[in-house]
Length: 519
Image (cartoon, rainbow, N blue to C red):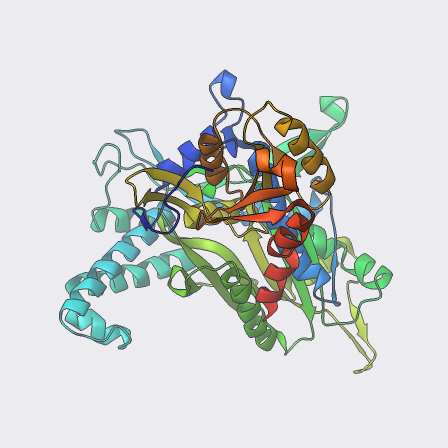
């Protein structure tokens, strides 16, 4: 085997920047722009051969941790099309919109609320740096920090004014704040803004053969409502008792004003959601429990604690009495990865009112009927995909001065678990490698490749994230042993063909990851 200087190597990229991730995804078959031969469809992407494998493994990790490990959580796969009254009851028809603002010079479109929130974050972060230099404790009360730093004070003031404007849906005030705090367009650099207006995020469509007789429908903007309208169907057929949950993975669609930053914000995306139904009065205790449970799930992937944090919602949605986000430190900064919300009984109550059907649960222990309260955990699958790539894509320089790009995925999530590589195609090595591949392919997603030198194939498997490479050489024909190479350390050892499954099987097993998640 080639000498790779396997003992010492120096990482030279602490975090993959977004553009490197985009390029890597295209080059190695993870993600392609949709309809690329027609110059793409904005903010829509296709998952390639290795992307779909990684995506499915992330789904499996979430689904098993939710449904397999919890006897009181069951699954559902509801339809994308729903009765239009569903979205009236949920409030989406009347209020599912974003404040839109355009820069007159660049013609670039923005969400006004995002512009203000980003300005708040920038002012407070700049202020915190000033406070740190002055030796002032960042855990001090907000008013003390505001007194000590002009930038922090401006951030706090803007946050308060923005909160009032958002509460009153005062979009005229949004524009005034954007102008007052001199927020400029990132393209033109100008502050020549249009008025703020509302932009509905739902995609409208029709069901029916003839336009005049067709029913107006929407592509669902979230998966949660499919769970709520099926609450009693699931509860009765699965024989569930409160507290219990319903989990679902599915597509949702939003006509985003600004869909950018690769797969972080898209118009067609996938959600992994669980709605947990509890007794009224116990919701805040369950809210705390699910916060801890979900954070442990993220940390089990080996993520440093400093790259994950909770963000408390100061301004709550009208249906919630508590809400926090788990934020991850993406290359674009700390952004929402998962939301944990206490939705009270709003959804079931509204669907009960609009449908005229009771959506209540009879609690035999209390001997009474009630509408359960709901704790929601909702994570974007595409954002989770981006988070994994952001964390695991590394450039490393080896002791001999060479560099390699490696995707250090947890083995259970890796698209390809093991690559079987004949050293050369001749002398019967390819046939022997094929024999090994055919025997072991039931263990997991194995990959066979014989093109290029063994060194180039190692590098390609590193870039795809393959944890182990099995190399078949001339010695294999003599004693039925192979060389197994480990991705992260690049260490190599000789093992018997009969021991391959035992050696790698435990390490690539999803159950190991699940055990960490509940530890």
